[in-house]
Length: 90
Image (cartoon, rainbow, N blue to C red):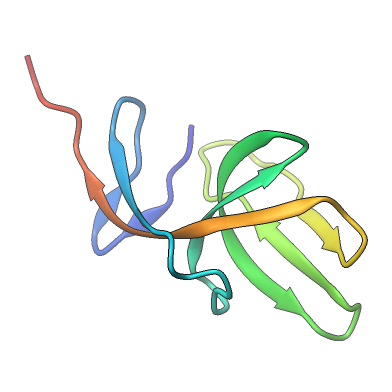
């Protein structure tokens, strides 16, 4: 499960996120929505200029390896997550 924290609110199953689509060049540690191979995901952005790539890190309850994005990889940034709206309770 995603556990990214935005302004003190953790993203959990059933929550909604508000995405600022104007942010196409995120800063390190921004939580972004990206599209890789036609699959959307929410990951933490980290630039790695030493290796000329981008790392996408999972804030998760499980251990996932980073995703390495290189210049030639098909990759789109849809925007930066700016707010979490919690799932309404029943």
